[in-house]
Amino acid sequence: MSDSADTSRAAVKTYVPAYQKSEWQSHADDLDMSQSEFVRTMVQAGRKGFESGSAEPDSPDPDPGGNGLETRVLKLLSADTYSWDELLEAVSDDIESRLDETLEELQSNNRIRYSGRHDGYTTVDGGGDGD
Image 1 (spheres, helix red, strand yellow):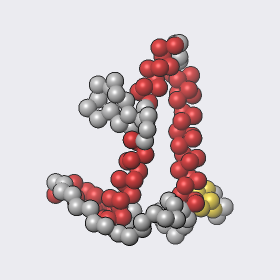
Image 2 (tube, rainbow, N blue to C red; image 1 turned 30 degrees about the vertical axis):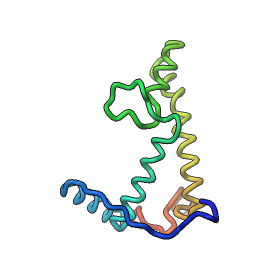
Image 3 (tube, rainbow, N blue to C red; image 1 turned 180 degrees about the vertical axis):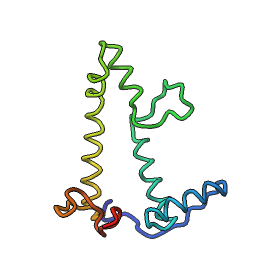
Image 4 (spheres, rainbow, N blue to C red; image 1 turned 45 degrees about the horizontal axis):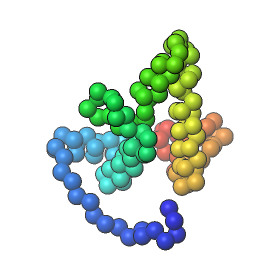
């Protein structure tokens, strides 16, 4: 976010079925988040799947957004034959890159840190693993 970005708050209103609101609230409670924080976080996470080039326009799926995996698999297979292991290796580099970028972003936003005590990444507040 740039220094000149408007950080004032504005309300966003939406309507969802009652069961969905209840599920969201339950999930937010499980994550020790307010419902607003949960919805805001999920929307931001979901937007990453719609960044430029990620939609799959030729997909028969009614919801073709996502990480472009279908398109990548079809492109790979149109050029050669792959075993399961070879195909998995060919597409898994993307998840490694995305995970690395996400971890860097979460650390720069001071939401997670690497902890020797926890033998890996943990939330800044130490929650999430019951310790």
